[in-house]
Amino acid sequence: MRMLLKAALGAGLIAMASACGGSGDDTAGDNVAEAGDMKADAMEDMADNMSNGTAAEMVEDNASMVREAGEAREEAIDNADVVTNGN
Image 1: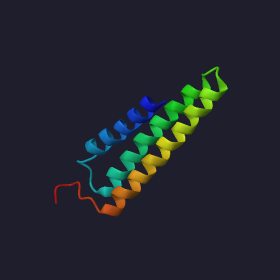
Image 2: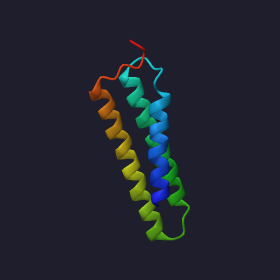
Image 3: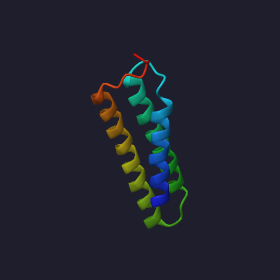
């Protein structure tokens, strides 16, 4: 479970780094949130295919945390007024 969370957070950071050519902090924030949503969706799909209900619930809980972390990073980027177009 911790490995999945670390992977999700890493994916968010990679998305944030790759967003640095966008036209503003809204684009960068949206990209980070989108990456978090995609990772959370994949985790939820994985949980749906698990036969152990307790483990599936834990994965779904982690997916929620990943989604919330992506949204928090998006808000932080937007609030920081990050300039990503080189100006």
